[in-house]
Length: 454
Image (cartoon, rainbow, N blue to C red; front, side, top):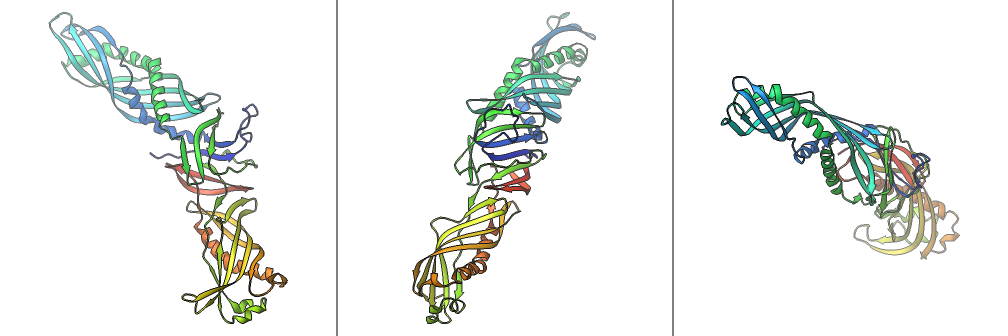
């Protein structure tokens, strides 16, 4: 099943940016919006129509009519079962303050069971006969009420209407005159009974049962790329306007960022996602030379032309955050700088400098093949000395500048390598993001807009 949706999935703490002032009190959660264009997803709801027909009682219609050459015939239609829907199309719309309108236009091919008795010849009768009929120009219009019950999404049929343009006999099992009987006498009563059946409470009840069963199969909890656990229960009643439908969901798990800026809510056929801060991976050790450092740390002259290795040890992964200026990376770690004897590969090491560092890197954020990437361009570094076998480093005026420069030259490529690997944009299971684009960034969030297929 594939459909283009118009959705907006926004993580926020206030729904007031899109809901009217008469909306219920603002609640934390995730806003899930279907726009008018996004209602095309309900086209796929045609797949449940045969199931609905198979679960309703067939109309019981009877009467009598003259048949050419055989006299008066009493007939009874006692069953009708749909065989297939042909050339089906549907259209949907939003009914303000109510829900969804769904109109299905189709040709319904059905098999009708009947029995008959020739009144002028009581001993001539037939039972277990069938007619294969074509219900042409069948139009079914449903008005569905959105609601909630015990924090669960509900969809209830408020009304159903049906109109059949004509019914034709495709083939008949029995005497040839049965087709003539149907065309002259049986067709209109059956058509009226069929239309009344669709408009009646039994059909609506069956629709509700099928929809409820479908909704019940929806998982209550969904893990979105390890970043957010979605709880499909309501935190507020649905809100329906002429151009969008909004429902509030309850997120659990990863911390939800505060939504502080208004977001675009008018893009058709698109999804808008708000992604919270996430963790980034660690990187490899950085290799250096003592000769570079000797002018700034003279005591390193005891280790001429030696390799230095800077190894990072962190209690937690670096943190990525989204700011108005772009993307920020914050690292709190310990760096052990060691002299390497006997070659960088097989040599032995001696730790000479231990630093506790706080590194902040900043840059732009972009999207590549559905992955959120960062490109960092500067680093600010603060440190404290944990170990020194080369004298008082804090007394060296230029050490902080040199350390920051080295971090920029040595760590920045490593950071950008992993930032290039990036963060997979979270999406609900079964959904694929098509051409995602960044539309806004702010404190603790980045907003994307994208087409969706599923």
